[in-house]
Image (cartoon, rainbow, N blue to C red; front, side):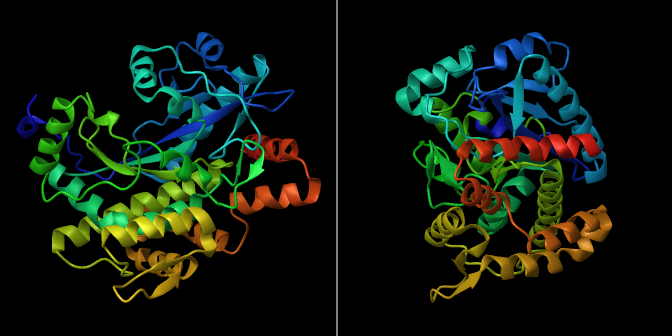
Length: 378
């Protein structure tokens, strides 16, 4: 299929769906375990439970939903069922961007697509013990999807900082809030996407990538945001997995509301607020700062090098999204998110547990317990 013919299955409504990559742990040691193959054998009738690149990962895909409340019901039931299957196999589910202490290289899931990637990436492929939250929002057209993608790029540091949940890596405190982002930076096609003037321009770019053998399908492109022509969505991929579903739904509500707001800015040709510098070098620097300092980061907002705190920008963004949130029914989720800004994000909670216990196993145990306790209440 030539680029001009790459069809975008547009969505009339800004639907929302999520993908969550959970860590699979041994229930006794709490280390990562290659558990996806036996898990899938016991879960063969649920197509929304899927393998990922590494065998120590299980991915869940939500249904296509119109509201976050609908998403909450759908995903909570699915994760509860997944947890029951895991317990029968002595597996535990964990939500965080990286595992605190696992040292062994990742084993690759033996599916043809993943085996091909392993052959291309060699040793790098075995370092990909990273876990992401992906949020899809329906877009009316391909042109709208790439237009909103460009407008969304300056806001990625805010999403990254809010979701940061990977301070530890292979037994070390990395000093980063989201070290997952730094691991992925070693890969050839992760990070910020280019900007495109139209869907046709994106499609031609994809044609070139395919002709060069760099991609076979659009999902082979691993940018922090990417259009998904098959689903008719714009997919945000920059965020770490969260320990709790409540945090997951707050972030999904933010992404859905933000994309709808930016779609209207694109349609009306008006600037988005708050204003953050659009230049590529600033976007790259700001993402690094967000991955390093999390919600305490100061990011560049203008051409003079002026910086502002991410927390302040996040509050301004939430205030600017209020009208759109009322319309979408996401306001109560964004209200919770604003309150949550004054509490400890996951990377801070993990460090607090380690400061108190001096044990990374206790950090992993607390991550598992946060999800378990939440599912018992729901």
